[in-house]
Amino acid sequence: MSSIQNIPPFGALVISLDFELHWGVRDKRSVDGPYRENLLGARQAIPQILDLFEEFGVAATWATVGFLFAKNRLERDEFSPSLRPQYKSAKLDPYSEPTGDNEDDDPMHYAPSLIARIAKTPKQEIATHTFSHYYCQEPGETREAFAADIASAIAIGRRYGFDIRSIVFPRNQFRAGYETVLKEAGITCYRGNEPNWMYRPRPRGEETLAVRAPRLIDGYISLSGPKFIRWEEITQANGIHDVRASMFLRPYSPQRKGLEPIRLRRIAGGIRAAAKNRGIFHLWWHPHNFGKNIAENLDFLRSVLKVFAEQRQVHGMQSLTMIEAASLAPAVSASESASAREIPTELERVS
Image 1 (cartoon, rainbow, N blue to C red):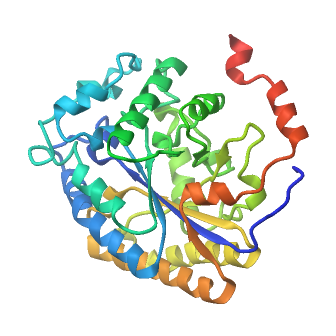
Image 2: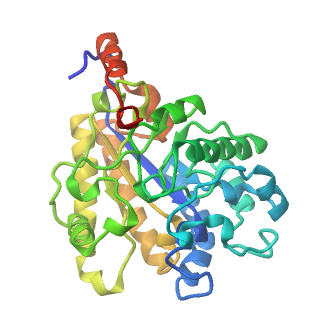
């Protein structure tokens, strides 16, 4: 383990939301299909989620697809990179998606008003979910196309006054070796995957039932072990901060209503363990997960935040954004940082 110092003397709750609307599901869900209710419902749920965060004094990181910042199609085209991913699966190409001209015309693909609402709420961080909901593990993508996408995401965020320093990879498709692209763009923090085989980054084609089913069960009973992160695990030897995920907040399901107490107990246990052990519990979800059964999802979130409030009172637990958690993480030793620079990345080995 690294030579470390100055570990914060408290635990922390980190919350991140993947804000994408239809851009995040366009290859799987039609804009006019049954999932439309979730997508439109997300627009109703977001202000209510923010109200809950403000009520409980809770911070959150909103990893936002760059397309959503645009006030109209012309502005989106203005910031779109000329170098784009050439996915082998054509249905993954977001630039082929038919859209309207602006948020009033097309609330599925534009969201500047919601971004403004998030930004004016205390303790909220605007981060990136890439410009185009970019897939780093899908065949046909390249390092150069990823760099161009991230540059566009940073640029359109800057247009509206946001200094973007954190990223969540779409579909959690982190790719080792791309950290230098992030650093060059000024991004110093990402949400990595849980350290268990079922959560490792993989292309969509490998997301089989044999992978998804254990993840579902893990949301209720422990299959993957302890869920909290230690402060000394955040700073990587290359200088990037991995504030990795602890749990996905699954949406309310009427079919699994009887399991709700078990689901809450699983999350509450992670929060309490992080508070007691002075670690971090990182909970994440998509706003559109709350877009159906909004009241039930908000009630469940309130129950989760009550657990946090209890731990804040008892153990001094804090609520932090991703970038705040990264800024408090202890640095790695100089020797380990130097040795990491000497180890070739996967990209360097094959080039």
